[in-house]
Amino acid sequence: MGIGLGVVLLLIGLILAFDVVRIDAVNDVIDTNTLGWIFIVVGALAIVLALVMNAQRSRTTTRVEERRLDDRRY
Image 1 (tube, rainbow, N blue to C red):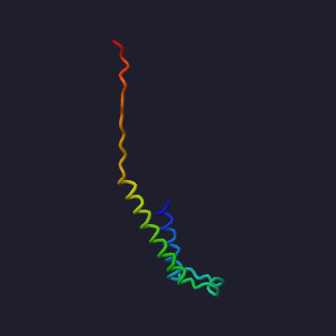
Image 2: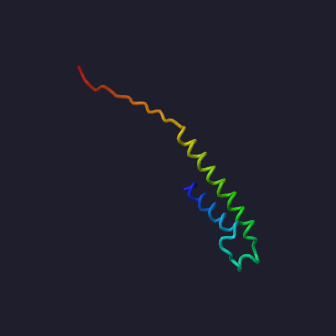
């Protein structure tokens, strides 16, 4: 989920930063170029953090100890 969210934020940021879509109603209130760069940074950070978390999860090892009781009576 983290990688997908990072990719979505990255794409939205690229669209806003490079003026692919112009939203005139929002341009008067918010600078879409700056908002786009913020989304790019947050998206890249989300991707990096998701990859680091997955790497840590795969490095952990679990140890299973199996004990069998012999119930044979002589």
